[in-house]
Length: 372
Image (cartoon, rainbow, N blue to C red; front, side, top):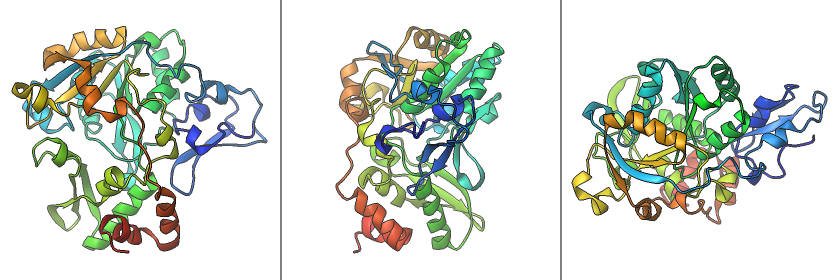
């Protein structure tokens, strides 16, 4: 095999190909934009084509469930859980149940220097590190293979990730006899930002404040949960100043400029109502319009039940939630990524040329501060 994919728009970086390779001939390596792609060691490749067969962008059906989900507005009954969650605490309810079954939970955490990667949790404190959104593509490393090992031992597993990652996992696990213990939860994903730009932004902040970044927090609930506040609220602390700094430059590059997302995001095959996950969670945007009595400034989750297994899991956790079944038309109206992929601006190519030529500070001036 010369390559697993035909073009960068046809690779979501899920790493299923790398993890399934029986010859260990594939490595995930970053390109100039910082996104990971499979690179084949031709000397080691045995041409078995398992990498192609497992790819969720090639595989027929993309592991999607065949019917539209049941939709719920939900919020955790514990206020402290809502305040430490990005939305309404649905993930905590789901993962609490798995942990109580002596299971493991896979989610996204910060590693050294705030690099973003998937990790495994066996305890609630470990799991809590997964609760807050992280806006850059996570490195899955050997997560799928590790999940397969846990399932082989009879361990209940909850995996959370983006839709393309969950499709990659479903394809990797396939008809494994222990897959009955695997619960897959995805998010409604706006698009995957570049890990390179995320690291550049952190360096930019350290120069700006003349200090080392000590902590970061996307979408803090210091301000009330709602669409304008949540989508622009990034806070960080530095080593010598524990008082949080509030920033929104990164959000401008991500949500407004739409210049830092993975090429495959503009042709995403998972931005519809048929999901590869058993359960989908997100913000219940618009709840103040559709059900004002359910509005909560601490956060409200959207839960989509996509499969019979997802329904069984929801039945086990709903006692921890206040919830109400809602018409699917509401989430379809408010969540654009249930209808279509993100559209890149015409200047995306110019953005990256500006980065290679002038560096990151120039991007802030030109694309955030509108100084050209």
